[in-house]
Length: 290
Image 1 (spheres, helix red, strand yellow):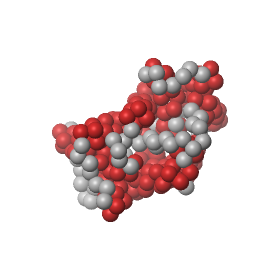
Image 2 (cartoon, one colour):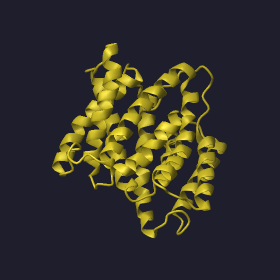
Image 3 (tube, rainbow, N blue to C red):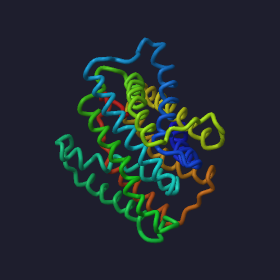
Image 4 (tube, rainbow, N blue to C red):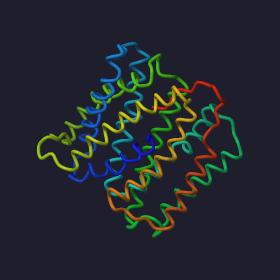
C-alpha cells in the first residue's frame, strides 16, 4: 500500500503542473495540506512544535533539503519529462548517498556496492541516450534538473543518520519541518509571483495537488508506523514498489507508454539500488529517512 500510494504522487504531481502554476506556489499549498494532515496526527498526542535550537536547525535543514529545493526541481522537470521516468530517477537516492557517505566516512567501501553504483549509473545513462527512452531530444536537458531532487534527499538522509531528529519522533519532526518549509516558501512564492488561489477555478490540476499532498502525508505517517512495527530496513523495501507503481500509475492516469529500453534501464537501476543499499543488522534501531 505504501508503494502504490507514494507511486501515485508522481503522475499526480505532473497533473498539478497542467495549469502552468509555478513550483513555489505548488509547494506552498502542498505544505499547507501536509501541515494539516501531520498536525492532526501530532497535536492530539501532545507533540507539537519543539522550540529548542537543535529542533529548529533540524526543521530548517530538512525543509530545505527535503521539500523546497527537491520539490521545486521536481515540478520544473516533471512538467517536461514523462512521469514514469521521474519515478525511476527518484529511486537513485541510495546510489547518490553511497559515494557521499564514503567521502564523509560514514560507510565502508564495498566492491559489491561499487558494482551496484555502476549498474545504476548505466541505467540512468540509458535514459539519457538519444532516442532510447525520452520521446524528444530536448528533454535530456532536464534530466540533470531532475537529479537534483535525489541529491537533496541523499544529503537529507545523511544528515538525519548522523544527527538524528533532535529527540522528536518522525511524524512530529516532519510536522515541524512542514511548518518551517511553509514559512520559507511563502516569501519565495510571493516574490516570484507564483502564488495562486487554488479555489479560484478549482479543476483537475488543483485536485491532483490536493490529493497528492494528502497521500504523501498519510503514506509518510504509515511508513513511520511500519518502521516502528517491522523495522526501518523492512519498511524501506517499499521504495522498489514506489518506482514500479509510479510507472504503472503513469500508464493508467496519464496514458504514458514506454519503449523496451526503459524496462532495461529500470532493471539496471533497481538491481543497482539493491546492491548499493546497506544491510542493517536485525533488531537494530534505524531512524527512518525523512
